[in-house]
Image 1 (cartoon, one colour):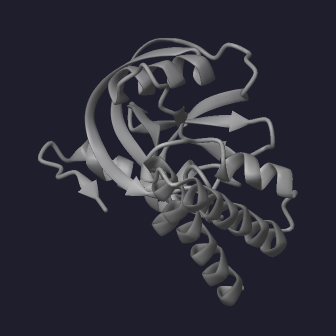
Image 2 (image 1 turned 180 degrees about the vertical axis):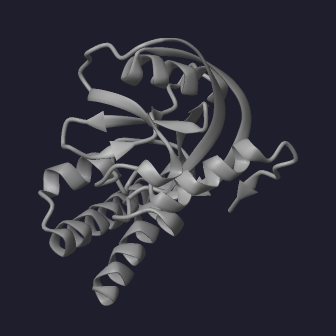
Length: 207
């Protein structure tokens, strides 16, 4: 498993290098070569992870320009000593959140995600952490992802049926349900959010 992950890391690096080169090179022959390198990196990931090649190519070749990490937000909504978790359709639990839309800020995106997934209006208060996904969450992602954890104050609202979640609830530290959606939220991150909420002098955690 460790050897396979190393190969995936190498493939991801090849993808990054080839996409960055394609953003700047002008020579037609170089462009052709770097496109082929990007294709090879996708083929490597497909072979190693048993993921259909078309899906991997879609992930690896869907963007242009210099490649930077994707940005994700996670809301830590704590009310009366309990934290809000949403129940996803696959049965797992997570802090509400998702990709930051192109026209939104971290503040507006985190509030939007809570409203969409839990039906609640919240007031974002302060950033808890900026964490790189592949250092803390599993399974590893093909992309580099920076997750912004934001402490939020509950304002109003209650769960509304939607396309992403089937329910939600507030849970004390010793009541956290399982399984957690480890690719989005893990137990250590929930514990971190509780500690941040209790500490007015909390220092932002960042990788």
